[in-house]
Image (cartoon, rainbow, N blue to C red; front, side, top):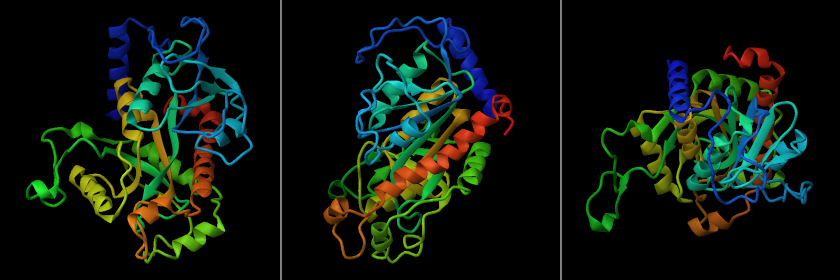
Length: 347
């Protein structure tokens, strides 16, 4: 049913815009230094498109690509994504290789993510007709659900922001000074179950890394899951433009997931609902995989304040960017090496 729905959306979208499959949308945008024409007779055929939010290296100048990585550097380096294409309106160039693997840094937050991805999908420089889209990023996690370095395959993406909120000082509220807008089921996306299962199965074969600092930091949390070694799991990712922190707001995120009737709240981040919304509008949601690794707990341990927790060096950053790459690359390799099967959605 989901596949037929997305095909219908894609056909209607292309018919309404007067384009052909794979040609993209003609249009103009600002914010890029690209000086090439928006018209091309030979678009890049993309099998897998990797989406990251930030990077510390200057990839376009190939500076800093051997230092501590951000979300995109390992993909850029290990898949030799050295061909750069500027797209007007996008946060960063699209990098690709000759094997059909491409990716970009969309910027932090929903506005950046939506603007960048929309601009890229509209570009005639790429053929996205059969592309699989993979977010590979870091996140926070409640200590009773995840631990530092764990990787979660998102089976649902929920929006943290699209509710009514007020201060308890301004009136009674049950239970979190918030109220859901009625009849708005589009505040959550449940993702392709077959892809979720496949991504988890493949990801569980990955060798997850860890650090001594992360091992010591986990011990400060009393929750059994927090103290465990990194693992691959499945759960809902909660997307919001506010970088919130603390047990009260963590409980609220869990409450939102419960109200939406989706799986346990597992990760918190700032881009994936925007990504899912754009892919849904363009008819690609059925080929979307959201991978989020845990770089930090979403609340302090019992001996910390929230401020101290936010400033703490948990040791989780390097394992998180490494492990989400190791898990995600299993899926990317499976897709590209068996493209004849994946292209026709037989997974």
